[in-house]
Length: 617
Image (cartoon, rainbow, N blue to C red):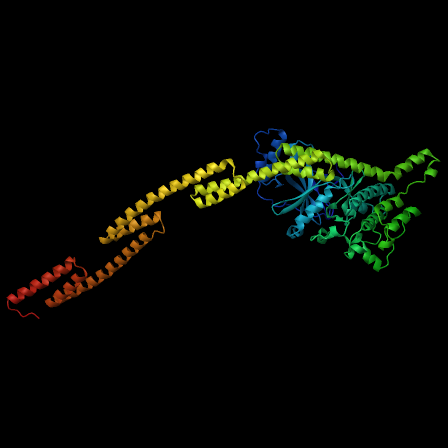
């Protein structure tokens, strides 16, 4: 299509709009839209989910190839299932992407696309956001109605929170109103859209859900002219207790003042008439091309005593109905959507209808629109239930039990009496539990085996005990115990052999120390410490060798000094001095041949001089 819009809507936020206007090969976006160029960074994912050797279908192969492409940077894959291909726009809650559902690709669905909204940092950072929005999404999933956008699920992938929903094609109502801002939309089109909106809100109110952020940006008109209400994910429960959430999505920008009642602005408990007021503002805006109170909140309009301008294209009855719903004072406002619809599209008088059968048929159709819409809604519920059951069965057949639980749970929520959905949900939950248990046991087994490989038997025993606690009859447990026992026996034998070798090396080192062979001592000590770094005997004998070697160096210095002094005495012919110095050196180093030779030479010289009669000093 050429002049068309595509919108992807989730649980909350500003409408996200894209023009599929073709300009060559380029797609351009509407002015004013916020476009995010890059997809979020998802966790590192593997293709193990698409690696089953028994599946050779074309859809399976295509899904597997898409996973591989995502790993190379072509798109971002969430939960190994949703491939984000392009940004559609940015709203109050986050960024919306056109995504390809790989489950549909695998099933060879001709239209595998959905919309995926990745929530912004405000939601990610709030501690209660995930739990509360998951609860709100569960409410949205119960709203299976032709005039309410289908929300599939709310999930997380790492720290990425996201929602999946149907991908719509058509035009957002706020853009339609802008296009007709000078004249207003054609009255027939307004009434058609209004009937759809009444049907959607009445259906939600019957389930005690209030939209709480109803506005043109949260309404989408499909190509067939029918309207869909968006962002029911932040809808609030009608009773007071259900509104006591610790986290309120409305706190993060969900409230739009121009469509908020005085009570909403004051943060008072919500009521059905809050949606009535917002709907009336939207209807007025469609008819007039402008807001009834110039985009001011009901509180400001009340303070300024503003009054909506009478619309000339409405009959007295139509204007009365619309003006009644636009009342700023809650007590004066139409209390329910059903009453607003009855006042705007009243049932014809049966007596008058008998005057003309043709008029009667038309009138009956108009009067029965609401009941027919309810019938259509129930049919849509059953259709959705069957679709979810079929999807769950497909997921179960592919052993994707998380997907099966997800789909079956929606079916059970929509139709609690459906035995097929209930049995499928139970079977998927049992299978998922068994898989998780097996995965946990495998994880413990792998950790224990890694400890055995590292010879950390205390660690291995710890994980083996955990494995035994989880499942004492686990088949691999006996083999693991045998591995631990064998490793312990081998370890003990290796330790004994090593100790024998250490004892031999210590004996060699001791002999070397006695012989003053310090290099030999160092060599043996190093070899021992390489085997047993904390061996105290090796450390001690090495220290002894170092000390002895140091003392030997100090003695050598003293001996050299004494020998030098002895030579000086010899030069001065003081032979007694030379003999004394040489003997002192020999006391320090008994085997010093130089000192011995010097002493002998001094004594011989002294003897010869005495024999010749010389006086020796």
